[in-house]
Image 1 (cartoon, each protein chain N blue to C red):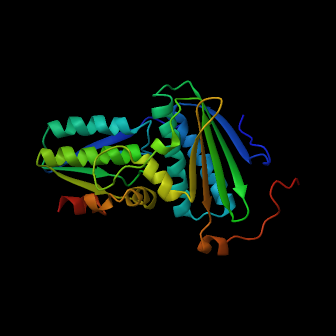
Image 2: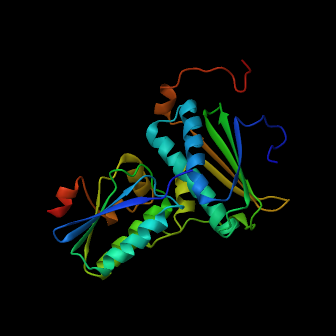
Image 3: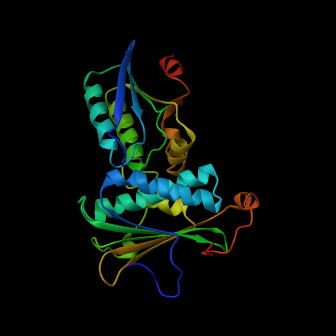
Length: 112
Length: 161
């Protein structure tokens, strides 16, 4: 049975970086949704979700990323995904949503 | 409860509660058998995703989020063509199969992606209403020609040691 999702949160300049750990699936995507909602209230210039240590994401995780993108756009914030590994990338590709997102290799790149 | 007539036993049969926290266990099991069959890493990832989406749909729609209902998952290796067959059964709300459709992906919005993922990933996907209630989903995925080239010949299916 998988553990609860741990989400590390860091502020770097004018951006907030969320770094979830482990799989993002039906059991765990609501935890990210909740944290994103809280972060958006603080109106950072940029919201970065670092997926470097996320091995797997299902459609509920993708839906959460779409929601985060849309809420960021509504609040005039930039939204960036970082460290998208092969399995997570496949999930985005099969849903043909990969082009919707700004994706960087590292958090440093996302800050540029 | 699943075995259809004229069929051999599945390599793996699992009965689980409709609890989302158990999905990672099923993903790991599917990935393990897919590796034995000869699927490459990317195919295994997509296979796990498709099974996960199918089970999530049962929990979300069939059982309306209840976590104490039953789901049965059966996994077979298939030989000609080489691949994997999966049957998922439940006793949840029954839906006419023709109503199960993926949504238009040009409409960018959260949710409703599961059926699209299943149909894109699997070579065959067939939903049926079970006479005794609930739904049966049969999924089949074959090895790609590239994956087939890397598979070493194995002993016949279900051969006892």
